[in-house]
Length: 141
Image (cartoon, rainbow, N blue to C red; front, top):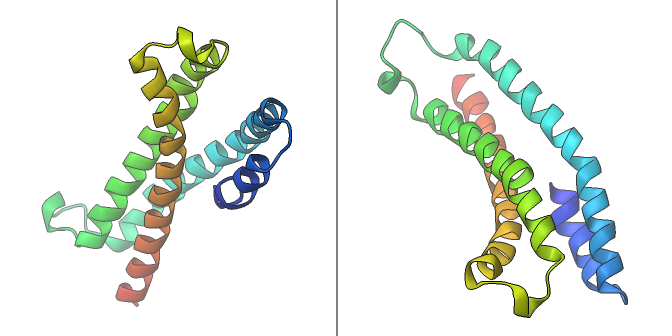
């Protein structure tokens, strides 16, 4: 996520051929998407297993430590936003990119501008998950 946001996007914005650069970015993002989904699956599976070490499942959920609840919410949002960005919005955006600007409705134009923000949101959610994990480790031991 950091590589795409901090390295690939700035480099591709400087390209002399924007359509070619955009195709290159899409190709690169698709390659990374597989790694991102593998990492998300690992995050959910290992987090589920390790959750029992941190909380007592016999107590109500709202009595769990706030950092645990925060991390669970962030992971849920990360998976939801990633799925929406990759599987729902991605195919719509590919279709809309084939249209000229004058052929786009207002809603379609907003969708094209909104979709990259979802990618950035996944970055911030991922960083939030990482930060909450660090706080959990620091506060438990």
